[in-house]
Length: 124
Image (tube, rainbow, N blue to C red; front, side, top):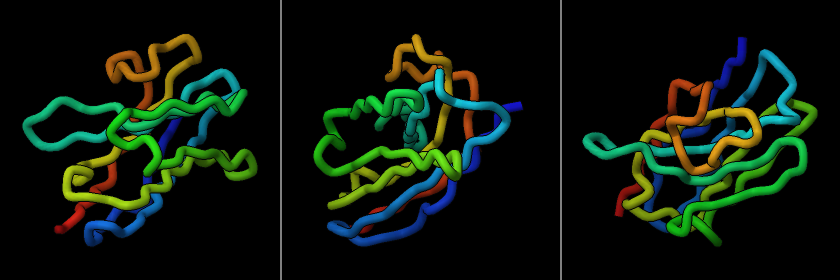
């Protein structure tokens, strides 16, 4: 059974940095996409970034490109999201998700596995 567990959320000021982690377990992920989505109450879940575990290819939403970096640690089976120059629009619950390669990376309904989410709050 695949399990995803996020950590690292918190409250910061605009311009600060924060790093999220997603510990993935239950299978090998070489043929999987690991992604981060975020959601604000009353709005749809939004794609943030994704990584193809096997090849390391990455993709980002335009809103976070050049500020956020997704990476993986093979030894710990963990995906990280380094978030720099945060602003209040980045405030959301951030979710880690996993799906087999071939999934449309930015489409949340195509992901099979989800973590419980971690809150990120950015104050101006």
